[in-house]
Length: 115
Image 1 (tube, rainbow, N blue to C red):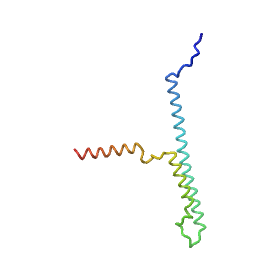
Image 2 (cartoon, rainbow, N blue to C red):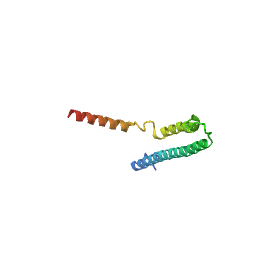
Image 3 (spheres, rainbow, N blue to C red):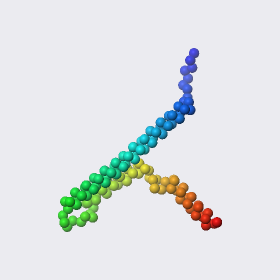
């Protein structure tokens, strides 16, 4: 009689599954990064066009550096910042690697001072 128990994954099947999951996570991360770069490109292009059109239609006595000229870029920029944070994370500039480099740097400086 054949044994009908469910066999656990063999090691190589488990590794294949883990590799496939890692590939899917990496692919999603790359898609998010590409999406952010497209968003940033459209932000620049559309805002250049909008600012150009506003300036083109301005009266001679109006001030170029008014909020009206840059309001779209300002509010859309806030959205772009949040998109950046969602893609790259809030610790993009001051993450754990940065902290470790700073700790190593200060420890090295301290070590030189006492030698």
